[in-house]
Image (cartoon, rainbow, N blue to C red):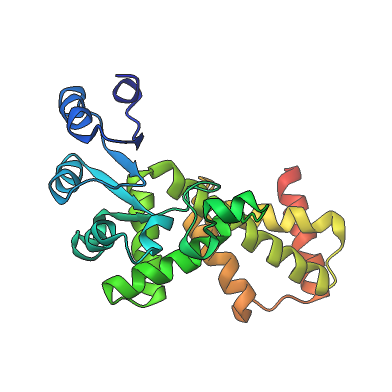
Length: 231
C-alpha cells in the first residue's frame, strides 16, 4: 500500500511464499520492481513477470547443480532478468566455503565486485556477449528502478565533468575561471534545464577534441562568462 501510494517499485525477498505473495501483489496493484534472488518455479517466475517484476539472478546461478535457476536464466524473456550479488550473502561458487572449511577458519567475502564474473555465467547460459549482457541487464534494472537510471546518468555526467576540468587545467585555465566556464557551458548545453544527456554529450565532444581549448581561449571565455553573469 505504501509503494502504491507514492508510485514506487518494490524489492521482494521471497522464500517459500511466492504464491501467497503473488496473491497479495495482485490485490495491491503495485507498479512492479524486482524479485530479488529468485529461486521459484517457472510458473511463479512468469506470474511475477506478468505483474511487471524483473527477476534477480546472482551467485546461486553460478553453481552447476542449481539446475532450475540456471534453466530459468536461459529461458525467461531477456527483459525480465537483472543481475545481483546479494553481497555478502549467496556467494558464487568460486567464493563458497563448505562447513568444514569455515570450521577451519577459511573465509571468503562475497562483494559487488563479483558481478562481472556472475555476468559471465549468464552470458554463457544465454549465448550473449559480455557487452550484450551488461547492456540488457543494466537496461532492465533501470526500467525496474527509474530513479536508478537518473542517478546513473548524473554519476556519468559527474565523471565527464571531472575529466573536462582536468583538460581545462592542462590547457592552462586559471582556477577562478574553471568553474565559471564549466557551469556556463553546462547550462547552455542543457538549455538551463539540467538536461543530463545533452550536457554529457557536449562535454564528451569537448574531450574528443571537437572543441580545441587553449590557455588563451579558455581565459577569454572565462572573462566573457564572468561579464555575462555580472549583467
